[in-house]
Length: 77
Image 1 (cartoon, helix red, strand yellow):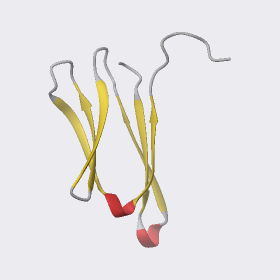
Image 2: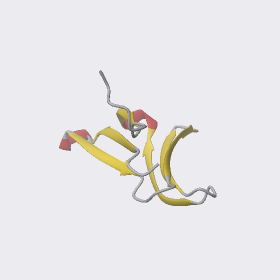
Image 3: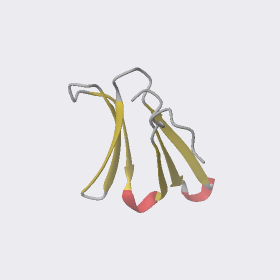
């Protein structure tokens, strides 16, 4: 859904820590995360399953992966 977001925190070696964000930018799109063969892949995907944007990171460099789904409109207590 529009507004879904995934934040990725990466160890950039001598440069310290970097944070990246992948967001579903349009209605009907979602963000999917997969971990294959030592690579973490975060993609913005359309309703039909076509990847629009993809970010790939080495799994050994990923410090945190925070998924923040959009709420259903219900206020949280």
